[in-house]
Image: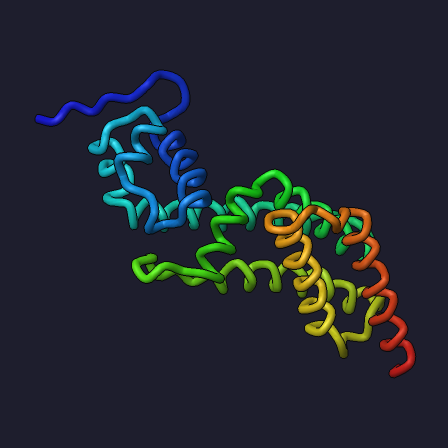
Length: 203
């Protein structure tokens, strides 16, 4: 029988995930061996296989963990109170905080999406954009119900806001952090006022 050894402290599963995040983001999926992951996590290979099956299973689990965490951020924003523009700015704040606090995760996702290696396990990254779009549209739709918008440009506003989030995230991860949070939030307010003005002109 194979013995499974782990270091004390954080759970073995959590340490494996943290190890994989760092290594996948640094070297890419195809550049990381299982041996490197378990050595960094302080566990043995059987521990990794027990929790995740193999490297592919670990990678896919990692992405699901990221999506789950991000959906929690979106849910918090959807439950926030205030006017439509206040809720949108709050959503933007939470998303920007998520990007700042999880840059390694963001780098991993963008790297897999934009430059995937040939042996990368298939994953539907559209689920991230769809979750984001659904949250944005949910806030805007409630604004329509309250009479703050007329609903003719709901999807346009949601798509444009999604673009702001993506640009900020890529700047923080790959750029030099030139786009500040205040600039991003101000962009939301300007965009909202522009859409609202168009709405009022078309009443």
